[in-house]
Image 1 (cartoon, rainbow, N blue to C red):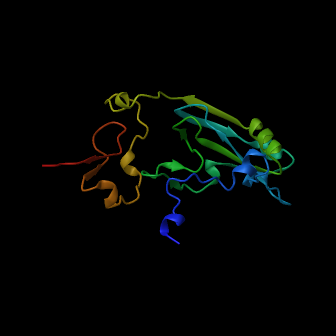
Image 2: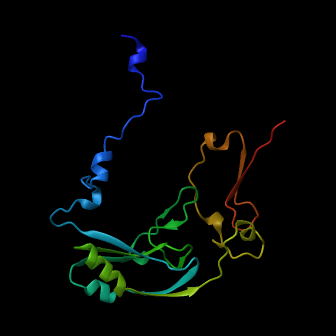
Image 3: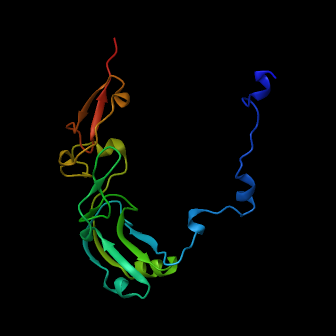
Length: 184
């Protein structure tokens, strides 16, 4: 038996899960329903930049089948992010992008969770936003963060820098970091 009989390079290989997916027989995590299971849904910001004036979750919490309704005030001030740890789990005083999570609900069914979210009343004050990266770097552009240097960032691996020199929080509006490469 030669090694050429064992090679798959250049040969079409079918997806094992393909037939189950195209026939609708595949099971996904959302298809699983267990006794006592709760469904979670989040209310998201419709604005790219806004101050949260108030959040009223009273009616949502009273809806039968709702087990929890959480806002940013109910959670510790933990920040997440890929490069800059600036995103709260649920927005606190401000939203900084369309779709940012503002309220989370846990309920006995997806429909009850949706109904609870419809009962939440969030009052916003829209703030100026910028959508062009070059405009965002202008001195008078609306700031994503008033003090970005106040946030932590995870260590940057050398493999990311490729020998470049990283400067965090340069004096350019809305720029968190820049990497400078020199050659020659």
